[in-house]
Image 1 (cartoon, rainbow, N blue to C red):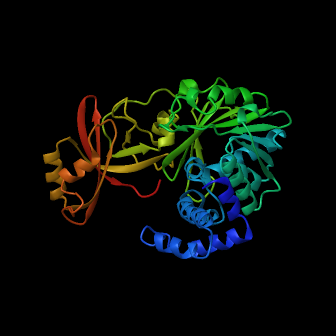
Image 2 (image 1 turned 45 degrees about the horizontal axis):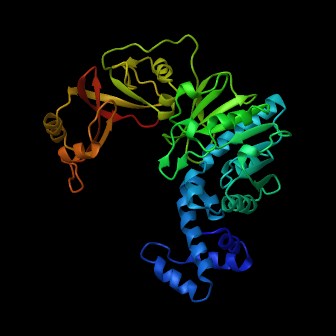
Image 3 (image 1 turned 90 degrees about the vertical axis):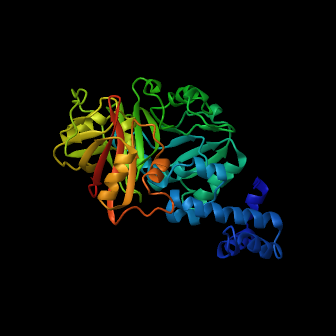
Length: 410
């Protein structure tokens, strides 16, 4: 889809074609027939653009919920955009920082993509301007701001983010590209623009936030910055660096957001807390959320549940008492045994297990292959109706298997 075809979608005729396409069958089996029917009455380029949008909107529901039905996307823009829950959380932080310090009134966004963060801040009442290098993506961001009714607070201009002038703004938000034609980029120096360039621009305003990859090395976090790792519904989605007036007092933070956009919970380092104790397996296994692990806050979880680590290098916490926490999933440990496929299979059969979940950490096993070896392949139905979670890990160099039952909730 090119810029001219997309602009055609925004016309009255384009909107009519888009509505027709949305009402048709755009599944793999029905797409060709729908396209042929529409091309009999409308220009081929317009039909192609409309069908592309309908399919992208369907994919976009996972990130944007009901808003996706009104929004516009490019394939790359959708893939790289911020989930609605994360953008709303970040907007709340911008707003809260502004209310406490009184100095966040207008935000400049460098590399605004399809506008997810820009729109979220506008919905929170914070005006801002986005700069986007790609002409089509910039046009899509403008269309999204209009479609969601915030174009009075969110403006988008085409341009090079590295040449943007941050003077006159109270804060900067930046989302440097972390993908190339060869795939994901993990080295912050290879971001587009590089992280150092973005940080230099952000240093010209009182406060800033920079979206980074969850795998960013802790040593790459600038002095004085706060790094926040965010998970949604248990999956780590991204990290962000908060700078200047927007940084919290802690250097590390893990934020867990539920799916749906509600406010989440946050864990920060506990002063004076050392490494967790190393101990034998207890009655419960606690699996810290991925954001907690990325933020190096496993010791804080161990402290919350009164537990320790069975192995000091593996982020599984164990304890004798059930102490529910939103920062870790809990499992009741039924049995701990040396890892052996033959023995494990025999035990699952004895327990009449029909529903099997396998988790691993510190182990090189192939989970799919292990399922098949245990008799739970694609056609395998297990051995009964009972349910169990098998956790494969190690203590020192000794591989072990834990037979556990998930404790409902967190």
